[in-house]
Length: 344
Image (cartoon, rainbow, N blue to C red; front, side, top):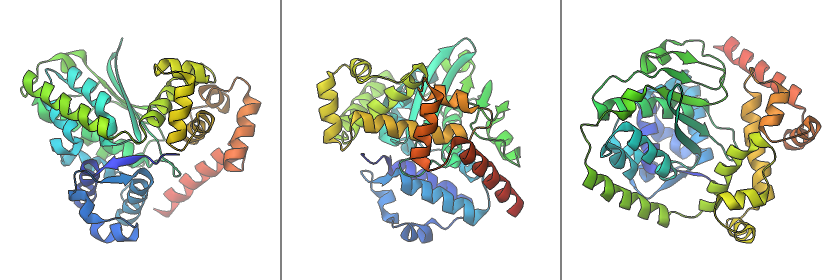
């Protein structure tokens, strides 16, 4: 399967946030087999799993599980690569965040974004995926903190979301989260999201420039065209994530959604080192790991969210993936959380 990657510009923002928290990333990079000087190379990419290991080491060294929130303090358009400038020149945050969703693969392939208007307001939904390693929750928290801080920075207003949703249990110390988001916080949610007031999203931006927005769109589009190694794999995974709660997605349905034939879809996936069935299995495995770490979700609900009509099929698949039953996996995870808290 094609390896997900993160842009050097986003990785540099993460490193700055970690160093602000007292972590010596110059020392950690060689330990992880990474080249610190690649952070200054705009075309360099870092493997998703390497970024996960970096988060894990940083939390262990700093003793601060909320260290990802430091991303709110390192605001600079370049962290979002060319996408940051496209967002700045947008007419409104609504238009800018739509651009962020369209081009976010440039920033990091391990994240899926959606931005929709609901009855409650505008919702920016984030999902972080790992490769061989489950993603660090700090990665999602950092992305949410940065997105909100960036919106505040370019709008010149102290935007306060209606609500901020987090997967996973509440942290022992909620104060850093309250300081950064300054909004109602909801944990053990089914997804990560920022829920915005419509007026905040639709107000004109002081940095708006239609001509520049068109120029940055062209730059971002050209970059995406060049950066096409795992394009079909990524797009297929996004479609699978959307369709799974409706039942097991069929190759024909996914191909139709991507506007290609089934044969073309299979050929392109093979060129990228995977297949439709393998990608479906990998996507389910990654999501299963995330769902079972959410105590609010029952095993039956997790089964249906993964597209299994028969829960027994989910249990068999889970044992094949992880060598244990879903119940045993969840119990071990909760026991690990308790052990971590006891050692702090």
